[in-house]
Each structure stands twice: as structure tokens, then as C-alpha cells.
Image (cartoon, rainbow, N blue to C red; front, side, top):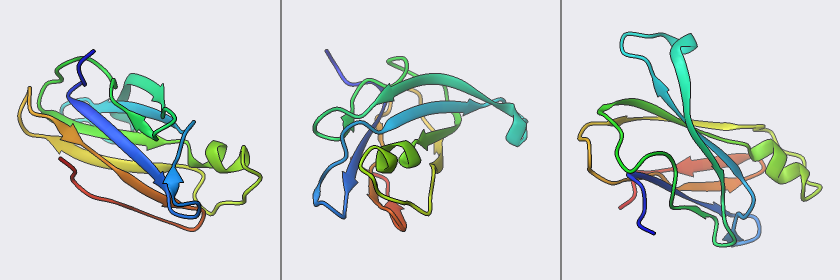
Length: 117
């Protein structure tokens, strides 16, 4: 099975391990739409390696997208309080067919992301 156009990898900085079991939702913004114009495209859960390699269709059209990570559920399942119940990462798909990898480094009170390869 090949990877989809949009993938992610979540690492738990507090344990130094992949974050397995994080709910991830892919949303797309309707052209010209505001915040209320986000529609769900796909949803998944990170695997034992903290990855989602199949998120949505093989190809998505150019436009604005959002990844929503259920960090509150992830930390609650581990008995850990968190300041961020969810992480939202908005990004632009400039070219249909090009791979976009969006990693997330997570802890209960901080997170970071970058454009992966």
C-alpha cells in the first residue's frame, strides 16, 4: 500500500517515543471560505510508530488544509494533564500530486511542527 499525498508522524517528547493512538483529522477549506468553511476529508489514528501514512485520497487538489490532532485524548489515555486539548496545523497544498509530510513533536505543554520530507 502506497502512502497518500498527505502524511504525518507524531513523536512524544516526554517519553522520547512515537505517539501511538493519536486521532488525526484532515480538513479542507472551501475556496473563499472562512473558519466555518472547513470540511472533513479523512480521519485516522497514529500507528505504533506514531505515523499515519494513509490520510485521505491518493491526491488532493491544491488549496488550504488543516490537520487536527486529538492531543487531549492521547494524554488523557496516559493519565497526563495537557494544556493543549488539540493541535491545529494549517498548511497549503500548492501542487496536486506532490507529497506533503507534516510531523508533530508533542509534549503536554508544548508542541512544534515543520515541513517534512
